[in-house]
Length: 113
Image (tube, rainbow, N blue to C red; front, side, top):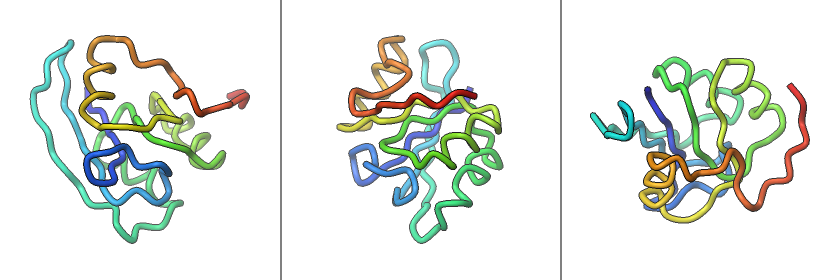
């Protein structure tokens, strides 16, 4: 499984559409097989979901997401974890241990798909 985490340095980017980077983590069970960083600097917000899909991502952990990006990600079949903040590595550990909730504490999403 390929997980994407939007980054701003060592932290999760507060906004999906302004993230400078993307950490791609290949996961099998709870083990990390491979890590790769991609730049998203200057990429238009509307192209980011298709970029994730083209890279083969199946899930995303990010900060705030525009409604259109959230729905585009769901429509593309991505598992979406939005509204997260803090250190990338801590959130990755929580994801691997199964303790990362579907939405972060700052999200109030009531969208229906």
